[in-house]
Image (spheres, rainbow, N blue to C red):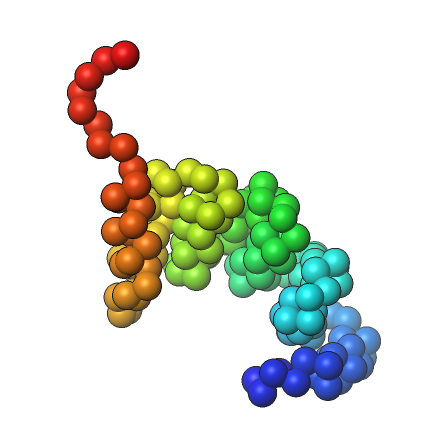
Length: 149
């Protein structure tokens, strides 16, 4: 998998999954493999299997959210990401993914900014790309003038 040999990794992971259906690792890794192979339905199936086996695994919910987002299922992605945060509020990748979801797909700049800033606060190192996204969002957001309609 690390070398990007997803087609070669798939049968090995499938065998491991069949030999040890109680483990979630093969389900997670197959989900990742299928996402890289543009097999969203298969990725979702594997990631749902991981969640069913270990419902307290935040990473499984986070990856399931990514799979949903890639399929255009944005509300399902939001729900999966929120479940990941309920399970582990320290999984910082979820804040980034929620920022991306709200920014690009749900068109909610306020929420996107909130999640991007939370991500930057929790990260050990500032992400320059996310800093640019934050700046861009702030420039696009309407300024409150105090005027009443």
